[in-house]
Image 1 (cartoon, rainbow, N blue to C red):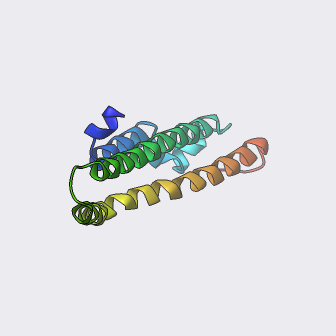
Image 2: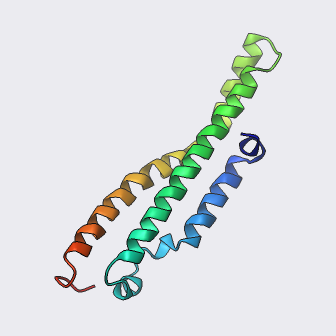
Length: 129
């Protein structure tokens, strides 16, 4: 939990992007890459790695926002100041919360791609990339 406190939401996003780049997610549907991955083993492994990364960073982002709100709620200030501070915090992190939404959207997309490639893998030889 201490690690989450020290990381800003921007750092979490950058780290997530860096890890997704490391598994070559941007090349997942690249036809040249697919042409060399006839059994789709590499593709399915990339998807599994990306799903794990996204799950990890969704949890980090959620913990980050929850912990920050908890810290504000625990401040020794009057209720109206606390409410104002929470409202200000929520407003200021709204753009960062869009990343949460993006990560939420990537999960079902990757799950659908995983099903497609699993089906294609079962039909090896019936198509050309």
